[in-house]
Amino acid sequence: MPKEKIRVTIVDDHQSIVDGYRFRLHNFPRVEVVAAISYGEDIEPTLKSHPTDVLLLDVNVPTSAENPNHYPVLHMVPSLLQQYPDIDILMISMHSERSLVRAVMEAGASGYIIKDDSQAIQELGSIILLVASGGVYLSERVRKNLFKSSEGDEEIVLSARQREIISLSAAYPNNTTYELAEKMRVANSTVRNLLSGAYLKLGVNTRAAAIAKSRQMGIISGDTADATLPIPKKKEKSNQP
Image 1 (cartoon, rainbow, N blue to C red):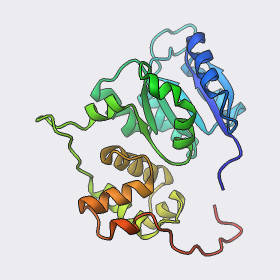
Image 2 (cartoon, rainbow, N blue to C red):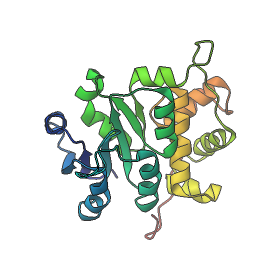
Image 3 (cartoon, one colour):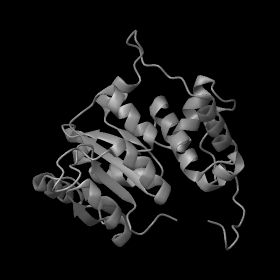
């Protein structure tokens, strides 16, 4: 069952941008902004006092009022995901360099929006709901740039572990990431990162779409038409996560 409210914390040092995000989210009753902060060093204390489902984070946020240097997001993202394995981190930035985006996504972020992507900003509420439900999002320009080969064609090459998790997801379409992680004997955050990485390479946003695309491309076996059909779900135990 989806959460009644998706709690969002905004991290950006420009008040006008924060106000703009609040305006965009105002018409989404399921999305609630629980905090807005300006500095990276305030993130962890804020998350402790304001439970958060989606962290909307500016890549270039200053470290603190006394330290204007950019907060080390590549260090902070995996650290936060270790402390808060259920949180989703949605990055927003003016920068779209391939190396930066790849590093942020490999660190565990659930999405990357360019600030001048007006369509994405207008659809911010829908994007937050998407990542909160296990999907990923990249601004289209970022996605195309991220997965272009040296010849200029889009390159789709899943790693062995990404192929494994897509295959496992196809076999057990009703399983949660926690249950898939138990089957792979890895951390829940590892499965989330494997899935999000596969989504990005395949150009999809959800697990069902990733399964269908993988079948279509021959990455995994099975009929494309059956990719999104769930199997009958057994009654869950009362202590099931």
